[in-house]
Length: 154
Image 1 (cartoon, rainbow, N blue to C red):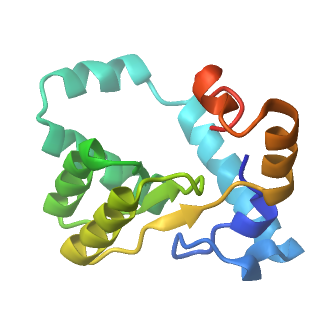
Image 2 (cartoon, rainbow, N blue to C red):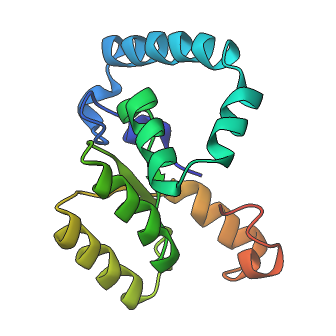
Image 3 (cartoon, helix red, strand yellow):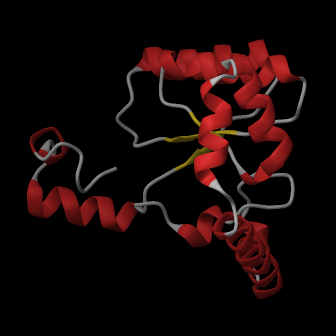
């Protein structure tokens, strides 16, 4: 469970403790409310029909054009590189984030570094709240997330 206060997003889409202040949070909340109105008034059936005939690159371009830095690609491994490649090919700015559980394989961290270098991006890493993690491990054990299908950890 990500600690929201540590992970407020600044105007460039980077996680920053500087944005925890009331004004930054209030501005972000206003922004979210404005986008919620847009989402509520969007004809998703029409968009879905349009995307059925478009290429993945066209879909990515449309999403980045429409939503800008209000959307981001969730990145956790090699299969997500395709989305990053499509975003890169659009020529538009894009954001990528990852939840670092502290339990990723060394190869995953190397992949993250390779992707950052290749695409000249900074992946926005978020981390679980340490106290919540400690409480989970104390009550459920070190490997409960394997047994419960990641219900509580992710």
